[in-house]
Image 1 (cartoon, rainbow, N blue to C red):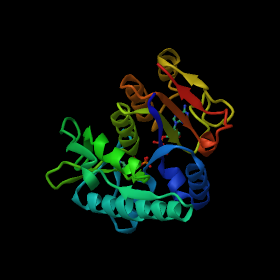
Image 2: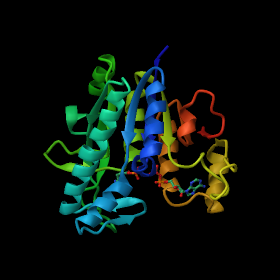
Image 3: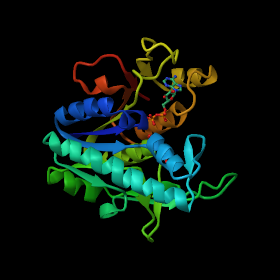
Length: 259
Ligand SMILES: Nc1ncnc2c1ncn2[C@@H]1O[C@H](COP(=O)(O)OP(=O)(O)O)[C@@H](O)[C@H]1O
Ligand SMILES: CC(=O)N[C@@H](CCC(=O)OP(=O)(O)O)C(=O)O
């Protein structure tokens, strides 16, 4: 039987809020078994870019990343956000190791081809180096990935953190029984965005199509769910979406996605 591995992604709304981030890191540290953390930080990058007089443009939830923008991304995701999370995990006795996709050549990507829109230095994942990540897990490190990849030709690329999480989960699925958790500020996929009790507990292709038609799924939830179904189609064992409480073994209110 394959060993269990949890891949957990946290979004910008959690990172930005110190209280929420601390709560999350407590739960994450308490999780048993092998685990990998992937963090975003889009909101923080937008705020810091603004302070530096750099305007942020997002299309379909993806950031158009020019040369100056990439510098901000590298400093904020690879530096501030990643190192802070790693230090906070170390303080909790979790032996975290902060990584971009360039570190250990763990995630190679290509610059997104220009079609209608030029996303600049935005990357699409090509290859996850499961062997390198596995070596870290075997040495009892807890990898913490930021939303940066590289093209193996010296170019860093800004890459959506939800996509990094699903691609890492897919890559690790040949050797592990994987569960992918998307942790954000709501209880799960909601029927009514203003009602936290309206959680869709089970989402499968049938009711997913229905919710898409009714436009109940919108904004950031659209690419997130595309990543979820993509992961399940590529042998990820289980995918869940919910808030910080989801990581508690006794949690019941969150969304489980199946095929
Ligand atoms: N049906 C839905 N249920 C829950 N959230 C939804 C739904 N439709 C749209 N959303 C929006 O999707 C957002 C999550 O996407 P995003 O901001 O990309 O997440 P993250 O914080 O993980 O980066 C939520 O903040 C919410 O506003
Ligand atoms: C290319 C691209 O869009 N990259 C994302 C990476 C960060 C991210 O995904 O952060 P959240 O999970 O907090 O949204 C961005 O710069 O916003």
